[in-house]
Length: 335
Image (cartoon, rainbow, N blue to C red; front, side, top):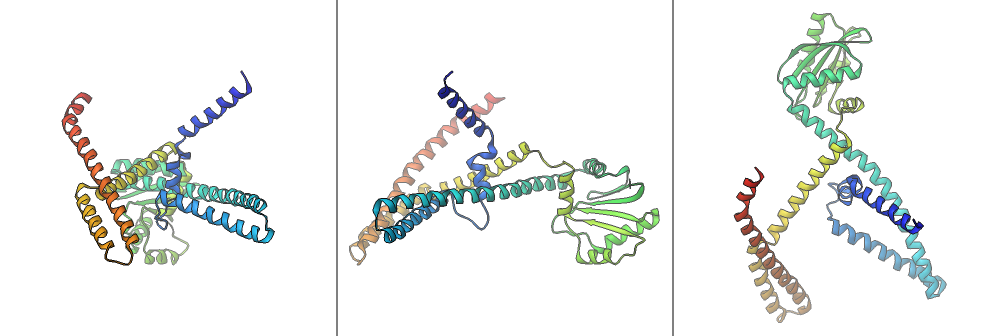
């Protein structure tokens, strides 16, 4: 086999591996780079990316041409400077992307774990907490009391008896000081000096202050949602990479479906008449204003939207008719 064929096979395998790994896909990278502060669409980001480089090229060219007064050399230096800028910016972006990617994947996994804990039954919560306590190093863990959102256990840690309390609360419902006092009463009754309190929300300020004022006879460790998630992650109880990819895929699909909904609303058949009459109004108004080119340009854009909405409405109508006739039959065939 020639070296050329080997090289082609190598690149094909690289491409196939890239396609199999969704984590490297453009959709996933776009999801990682999307933030609440940056509301630009992918098209807007591409336009900004291109405009910045065009601006920098002409800036480099003007500076070098003014300084050297030589066209070809100025072009050559400008291209080199632009390539250098592009190489550096890509390196910086990739490092930023890697950092954001780790954080976003952890956030997705944390949300999954948090929702699963909230939705667990009493038996499932008991099983989950016992597994967590076991991986944290507790032994002889036994169940003492539980309700629909509270689980209390007792275990040994380094030979010392400890009380383990788990409060499954939503984010806006904090564990209060009175509940910490109830825990202290139980500690006193059971002759236990240490307690670990875990919650899926947080503790009130009074609860934190009260625990800080306790004497050395009784010690209470408060673990809020963030600290709980870190413990679960350290115990390898987070979703796998494949599961995280599926969660991100679902988020991307929901986002794309939302954009599709907006697109259908923008290009609905009801809007075509509005666009058409707006175009006529602007064309007529162009003859009576000092800015005819501006009015004609906007009228052309509006007329273009009229044509696009009309064609889209016909396509949507055809697809809907086909679906109406075949939908039930398709469902029966899948049985």
